[in-house]
Image 1 (spheres, rainbow, N blue to C red):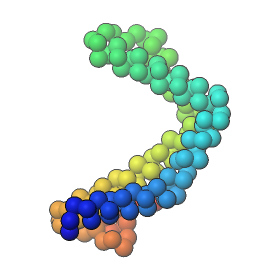
Image 2: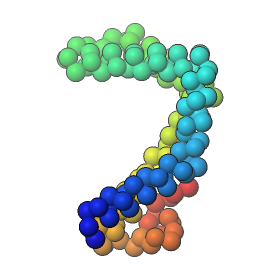
Image 3: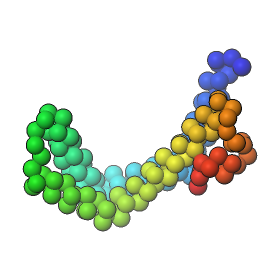
Length: 128
């Protein structure tokens, strides 16, 4: 098989993934998040606070108890937000799909697995 044929198949795989229920759900929830100002602002606020703590940690600076508490409070607010919670679950389902795809590809490349192109269960991939 030529490089061009492999790239064509990879493109077809990408197209198939883009048409999956997982991607459709993820896109719909991303749009829903963008339309909900409070949920969007909460997510941005959390990402900014988390980034600041990571930079502080990387710079070798101590993170205060108040900063840790602030992150914990924001995390609880994220969990309590239904849109963000749905988005997290949809992202996990998409990640599971991609892990199953990578696993199946690795099995096919190495020739050591029991994966079958007919069923996700044959790989233990848990496509659903």
